[in-house]
Figure 1 (tube, rainbow, N blue to C red):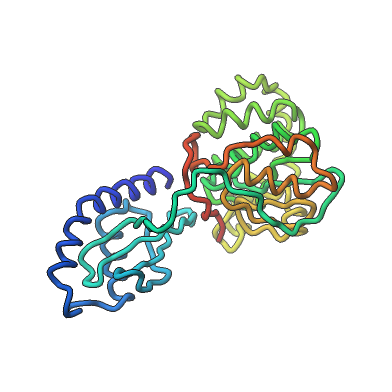
Figure 2: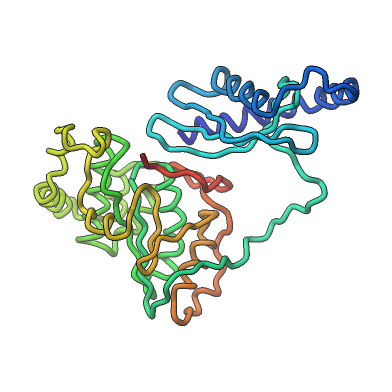
Length: 330
């Protein structure tokens, strides 16, 4: 999903560069009439059809959200959805005759800000020692993005707040997600001091075996924990029995079902701080740190330390500069 969406953006940027000159020729030669112009809806639908037929690989689909006129163009919002139902929202532009497609435009009346975003006002209960839970699916690209957001803040504030990774009570990415969920669950349960090293390695490229070895995880204890947990929650047997799946589509992963029900967890990622679901946007370490720091009765001095204000990419890898709007859920 991540690579495909990156390719989509690259292709659209190239298309924009090629078409900008043509647009202004078109603009100068056809000032009068408006003849041949389409409605915003029709032009956007034409652009969506073009994107689906020519720019997206099999299994990924764009759909129109809305279209409006904006400074002589039609601006439209679209969802790009993969087979695992993970979605990302994008904005694009199309000329009024439906002939030229633009990935974005730059408003030259506005300056481009390079600073990290300022503090965000979040209405979250305060505690002496905040309780911070990140619910994810281990192979959800946006769950991985949130874990990369989580790691620097844990390293900064993990001794001042109760912070942990928890699991949505169903899976969307096959048996490998069950395997990885169990690995992360058991490391946190048995050797929590090794979890951050393991996770910092895993989010780079998803190589569990390398990361287990690098973090020094006791694989005998890990195997025993996985076996015990599977027996307690019937995880693999439910995976094999589709009649038990959520909505007949998603295998159950019940290790944190009680917490999912308590907080109303619906998808990955979901952040719960002091019992309240909190939206983090952008999913940058700095933004997450600011929200966590607002959950203290008295913020510790570590909150004065600045972290990166840019969101990491979704999926594996440590690239920065990605959006923060996607999630995995039904």
